[in-house]
Length: 154
Ligand SMILES: [Zn+2]
Image (cartoon, rainbow, N blue to C red; front, side, top):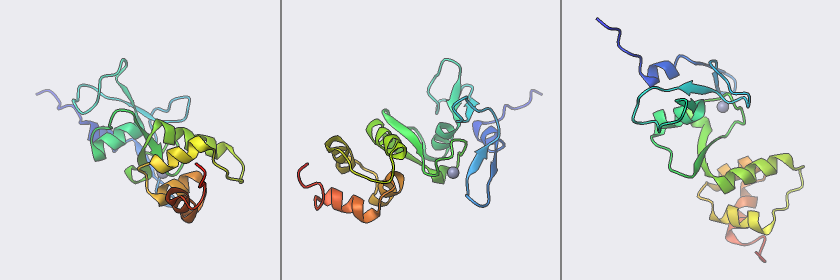
């Protein structure tokens, strides 16, 4: 009798180790040069076709735990640990939100958002707490910015 092919779930859950301290699920299988894990997925309708059947490990984690990723949304990491695939450390962001988070991380402590960035923050569907954490500011900063107490001119 032919051996039943392992499901994506079965394969996924064998390919990480849990870091008890951080809660991160560290991918132990293939990593891209960028540091992100990936998994080769065969025929499974939950996963969109890709040329080489490879899918980013955190995208696989998102799809297995939350379902399809809406078009134009990016899977981002709360913990900033590229190898992590813990669904609780993942969230979806738009391209603009993702770029803002990236550029904010490259800056030094002084936080002054430009007009375009203020717009992105005000239009974001992410929670104040999430945004604040990702941008390295306080929740109050984010709330006041969104309510228009700060950056009044924008
Ligand atoms: Zn993590």
